[in-house]
Length: 507
Image (cartoon, rainbow, N blue to C red; front, side, top):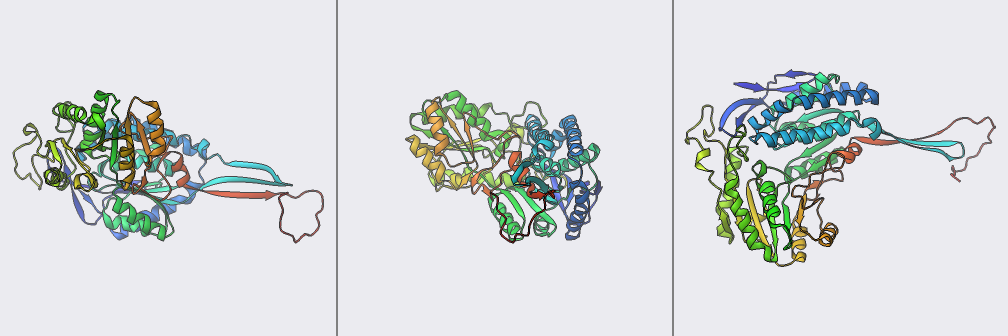
């Protein structure tokens, strides 16, 4: 069985720590094992990154940009291989995996403009004979801790800006789908980046703790659940680090009575069940306003049988399995308990279509031979206080909350502790404009169900979806991975000056 290790100092490192199983979620079979970093291996990765940091920080912007362009070409040329690894270890269908790689590639393209992005500010003659300029300096060693659901895109959110800004980078990917991270590291090496600029450290909680607490790690970027995001933010900032920690979500899609019903129903299907609901920007709650509720629920329910569920490497599949058997069973429990809380289960997807599932026998090496599949569930008459509403389910379960008015819809969304993404479907431009001002959510879509910003804007929610003041990638990513240095200079004037002990004046 393949053992997946680390990438430290420009080469693969086998590692000698504990191991964790890696499954193919579509078959339930154990396909590999990943080595989990020891305390000594964390220290070694930080040491290697620290040793590379000084020379890399002094590398010219022109050379950094050239290397980023090479990396962009290599990632572009290996999209199929990266997507295949995502499908094999995460389970998402090939079209979804290719879309993930393409969105990550956008962040590399953004970082190719690093000479412009790091262009400083200059004030000539700020005071008599004094010039002032501001430059952006790198931080040193920075770490990225990324989730299982985007094993290529989220690492590139961090890696591209971090190294372009002159930092060295340690990636700690999810141990559930670790292989794509090693291919990314190999492409970085092939692009010509010096050894130690990008390192990959496989691991679980001890590796995370080691990076967050290490005194030579200057900054930590994290994407994952809210409890872990809060812990990493509090631990890292207490240690004097910069931390951007993106947490969980409960994204709502508000549908007004005037909305295009077909477009709204299609959007709910696509955003609710895409990637089996394992997206931090997935729509998990449809807020049906007034008279639109009954026809909207009927339209969504009518479309669910059209969702083809199957292995991600089959061209006909539209939705793949969930990441693990444990997560599948957790998601299933929400559907099973919804009716007992007073909700109406319109479509019960707690069991996948029979055609998808192989006989329920134990697979060699452990696991379910039938894979970790679920069907699409639709739950109506949901209210706050129910588990199906309150919790981040992270699976193919779409809840419908009915309200009478626009104001009730806004109040519902704003009362939710999460504030990652929200969408409004309407034909009314005035309502859409008002919604943007009223809503307390970081990313807003108007007739766009998944409003993930393009790479030259930044990604980040509000409230319990983001800890700290720094969204990720785009312009905010450049700011996070640099610190400003202001230089005030005066050169000798031919005119002699008298001694003056007064405080310097600017006027």
